[in-house]
Length: 366
Image 1 (tube, rainbow, N blue to C red):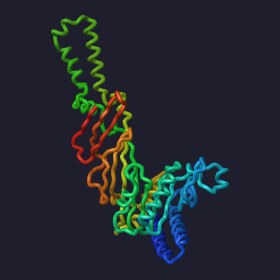
Image 2 (image 1 turned 60 degrees about the vertical axis):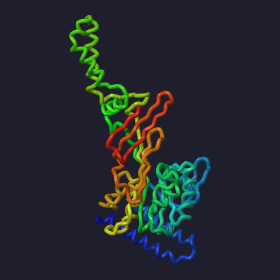
Image 3 (image 1 turned 135 degrees about the vertical axis):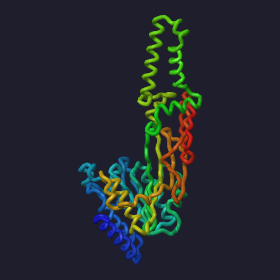
Image 4 (image 1 turned 45 degrees about the vertical axis):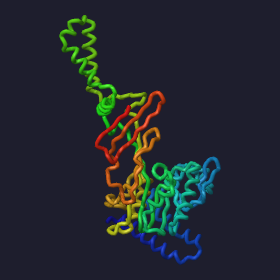
């Protein structure tokens, strides 16, 4: 392993040792402060200098305030000077991460964290919300426990990152795609035809038949013949450039159809890589806040240990499908899909229903 990896790994080992030492502190508040301070110093080591790590309260322009937050990472470069001079509260627009740090995670601490982060999001917070724990009261899967406590687990969870020392690191991610990057215009029209839509190839075949039917041609005058030739040439040109054109069906532009793939990704401790769960955690923070993926210096070649535990597809109209969860990791390709598309121009309603488990056939209802 490289020098940077080794140095940070040594700091993580020290962090875990300090947590063990702090167990002898009787005052719970002081014990928590020690643990938060140690973690803050470690986070500072893996993020660019423009970001400041502190503890405090987040405030928005409406004077709404969050609960006191254990660790806040904010962007110092975007703050005007008059705010920097009196930084009693962190403006919500500058916040890049908020953390709650627990000595030992249990059901009560989980619910308390959810309530705190709910208040933060309610006042407009959009940055990742992180729950970090030095230990846990269960042997089971932490992501599975969290899922039971958040009804918005798949789409808009209150907590977006969970890391438990010597156990696991989980994070929520979302990818947005254009449908045109997966399906060509030609394929779209072919499937549209299969579901009772217009057959574009039939129109071309009819035009070709007209121009090769002597009986029909003899009945045409010169103007009609010229018009038929022109139409045939134009239709041929359209077919040759079909995949480059913008299709519009029921007032929806095919090239503008988007969808989102929501995922929960998890990595567990690895006996072959010391402190792997926290190295992965710090790598994620570094990659998020850096212009380059500097987290790769910490993680090296451990990416194959990451598993997708939860999936959900969302179309551009907010319709949800394919919600699925497995604490041991989903055993199919979550990026390969089929779908059905329903559209009603009269009511102006549209819906895409995705299918990722059985993706051999593609359906369309247009």
